Every structure is written in structure tokens, then in C-alpha cells.
Image 1 (tube, rainbow, N blue to C red):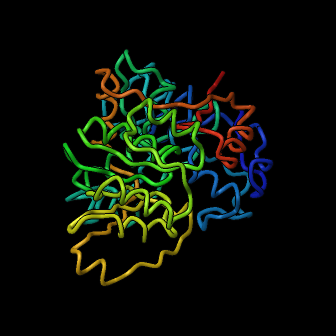
Image 2: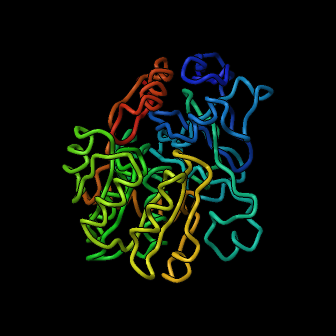
Image 3: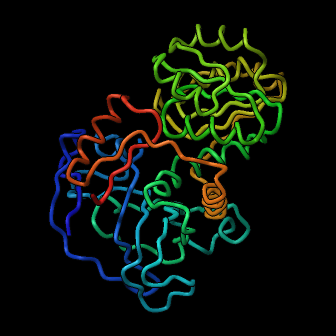
Length: 339
């Protein structure tokens, strides 16, 4: 089979299409013929050599978390109802299954939590119990947009206790998690404030639910612009860096910030008295739960959610997809397809 492998950790030019043996399922596993696999900044960090997870000794490395396709083979000892020909999406969570958090939940707090990689290929061998069968009304390309960005955003919004009438701030609103947060917050009855350097991108996000666009990247200017709009109830922060302090400054007393990323920097400097005197809450979050992904699939099937996909690329052009991501050209998800 063909796979779009990382052969050098040098950025998008380090992607090569290579031949690999066709996978065969082991006990508890299934093989999925991949129709579509969305890419994420997590993949790009690996490709740029900015991840402790992968180094030169691991090359060639096939990344890709967000797998959707058709079940081709099922191994022995599969306890879930997965059959040949099922159209499925993969929950990319990998958990130990026996720690306190695997027993009591939520599963994404697992002490050995990790993520699946291998979807940027014609076929993928996966844990069968991580597959979710898709309703007929949900296309596989649509489903591939859900696992990382939408599951992450949904979990963050729930942890931030977002509800009707809330004002939610999403800095860096045009990426996968940002767009997902806007759509899902809108479904929850909340108002949203989002930022971007691009007026054209903000126009696109306004069409899918953004209420208050701010064309700005300077943290001080953003702080002032947000405060002019209103007092923020919750912050969905996938940027980190200086935007953490901005989020704390614009939140109301008792406000809630959830952080899932470090795109703008892995370190943030904050005003500690502002935090404790304001009874503000800051929480870290990684991915979500398989149950939440199942809920998102149901929302798509019912027509209540339509994931935003910016562009699709054939497997042979996976490097171009990463170029678009690294150059911040897109609004929403970038998806690699089998065609």
C-alpha cells in the first residue's frame, strides 16, 4: 500500500509517498481502508521536529490521527460489533484500560494516555473498540474532520461549562479547534468573540456563527477590543503564549479558561493576584472522550452540525496540505483523501 510518510523532520518538504506492506489485524484489531484522514497541528509539530514523541530514529513515520473509511478485515477476539464493510471513524485515543481514570473516567485523563498514528496511508490497522460506525447520512470525509478538532473543542466547552447567554472568547479563531469552538458554542446558545489577522478569514467564520470578530494579533490591542465588547465568561485557548494572560484579563470573576495548545508559545506569564482574587479558573485539556465523539457523529447525522472543511488533498499531495497548514492559509480542517 501507499503511505504519506515523514522521511525527514524538516517541515512539509519532508513528506514522501512510500510503499508499505498491507496491514493485517491482530487480536482485538481491525484494518480500515482509509477514505479520508484530517491533519492537525499535532502532525505538523512532528513533521517540523518539534515533538518529543518522534525523532530521526523513528523515520519513516506515518502520522495521521483522524481516520475514516471502510472496515476491510477484523481480527480475532474483537468484542465490539464491527463488521466487514462498515463505514467507520476512529477515536484516536489510546489508553491503558486499567488506571483510575480509565476505570472512573474521563478516559482522556488516563495515566498513559497517547494517540493513534498511521492514518496517512491507504489502509490503517486500528484497535477495533475505538471504531464508531457511521450512519448512512454521514460521509467519511465529513467524519474525518471530527476526532481531533471537534472532539477537543466539545470537551473544552463542556469543561468551561458554556451555556446559553455566555460570552466565549476564542483567540486564533480560524484553525480547526477555533472553528469547531465557534460552531459548537453557537449550538449551545453562547455568543462568541474571535480573533484573526485576516479579515477574509473572519468573514468566513462569521458565516458559521462567530458573533464578534476582531482583526488583530497584538495581545494588548486584543485585550482592549474584547473589553469593549463585554466581560467574558469562558475562554477557549488553543494558542497559549501571551494569549493566556489576555484571556485572564478579560474574564469575569469566576470565569473559566480551558487550554489545549501551545501554537503561540509553550510558556505564559500571568498575574497571579488576578487569578486568585478574581476566583478565575484555568484548566488544561487534551482531546476528549469516545462518548463525546459519538455524540458529535450523532449531531452531524441529525443535521445540527456541519464540520467546516477548507480543502481536501489526495494522498500524493499530503505535503501540500501541510504547506497550507504551516502558512496558515486555511479556515477549518484540511483533509487527505484516498482519491
